[in-house]
Amino acid sequence: MEFFLNIDGQKVGPLTIYDVREKLRREQITPDTKAWVKGMEQWQPLRELGPLKESIEIHIADAGDQEITISDQERQELGRQTIIHNADKPRPWLRFWARLIDAPILLAPGLILIYQIFGAEVLTVMLVPAWVLAEPPSVIPSVTDWATLFVIIAASWTITETLLLTYFQKTPGKWCMNIRIQKENGEGINFSLALKRSAFVFVFGMGLGEPILRIACHIIAYLKLTREGETYWDKKCKVKIIHGSVNYLLVVALTLIIMYCYGLAVHKLLGEPELQQL
Image 1 (tube, rainbow, N blue to C red):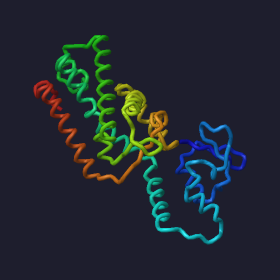
Image 2 (image 1 turned 90 degrees about the vertical axis):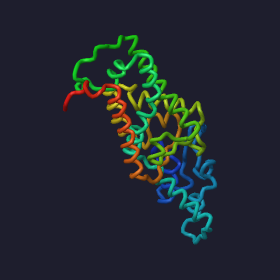
Image 3 (image 1 turned 180 degrees about the horizontal axis):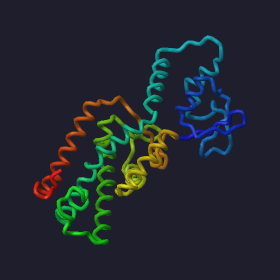
Image 4 (image 1 turned 180 degrees about the vertical axis):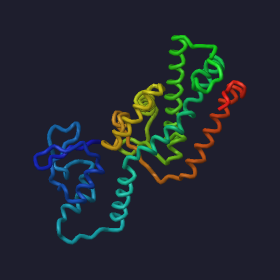
């Protein structure tokens, strides 16, 4: 849910509910500040909006300079909201690293299928840079082959990630980085929403699997996260990303395991004699 505020005659927004609560705490706005949310016919005071009507921030702001008493339950709620607010801050590099961990796992079913259909040589063309090979590849995929390869890779990414998000609400990379995806109301995401988000990530986050486009997409995603606090696909799917504390030892261990498995697969695929002596 995005809020727009009317502050001194100026339209400010879009803001998250956490941004609005923070402004109330800092006394930058009042409960009578006019606000608008998509679907409303006119501007209304913050105190009349459902998500904020019973919030502690509104009650404290209404109390003004008068002495007020906060119960233990209210104090715990304020602390919980502060934790959520801090956890909600964008952390682009953690999300980028989580995607790097996820990529070989999500693409593995597609690569196995390509190996079964096209054989080792075509898979070599896809996985291994030309400068690593001792000789140019003997098989060059046709346009039809490349189209089929693209469909398989796209399906592998979207379907695998969709199933993981639907049943576990996390992928291995997100689990490792302690990243959680949820709807704006706090509920977990269902199959259709997970499928929609996975497709958006493959197109706008992974650049359809094309290396140059992927680099451009990573840069754009980083800029949007640092400036707007959310990526294009999270905004379109109306989901929130919650960050928890990260066990960096687990991150390093899982990264090394994936790199080892990938290297083992390439070695198995090519064989030692076909590699250049670097």
